Length: 195
Ligand SMILES: C[S@@+](CC[C@H](N)C(=O)[O-])C[C@H]1O[C@@H](n2cnc3c(N)ncnc32)[C@H](O)[C@@H]1O
Image (cartoon, rainbow, N blue to C red):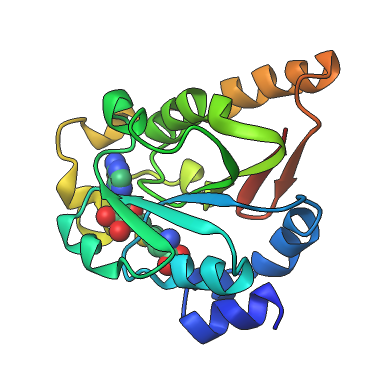
């Protein structure tokens, strides 16, 4: 089955967003995928999709909502914590082939997590920053705290304090020039970095 077919089978909204054909183009080039990390578990749908696609990989999920622990099953581990808690992130695996951030979608936190976790991505691995359209929404106006799953769990930072992704992109394009990152790919709805 293709990644997109598996996405629909497991009912992750990544399939409806039309991300999965593009993801497959990049991730099929990663050799011998052993470890995957996704920030944002919710129903566990995408973790099950990854597990079925990469049958011999160990899939780790991170979510701030303690209820998500119930989505653990053989080959899928769920860790409960905040994506900006560096001490918590340091307890995760040392190396990943694929990292997907589908967590808070608040730029300030997305960038913070990227800066902390990118060193754990293997050379040739892929890091995906998902749902970047959220960067251009006024979180106050759309009442994100109520509408976005997860927002209610993280009230400690006022939601208007989000940052744009621009600074990160400038830094990454410099890294591509210097040869420390292979490519930065901007698609509708997501940014995909190949190390
Ligand atoms: C869009 S859902 C994830 C959907 C899942 N990846 C899928 O495709 O099936 C976002 C999840 O991120 C979690 N989340 C929100 N803020 C977070 C944070 N600061 N740290 C960790 N998880 C967070 C929410 O609890 C929610 O379950």
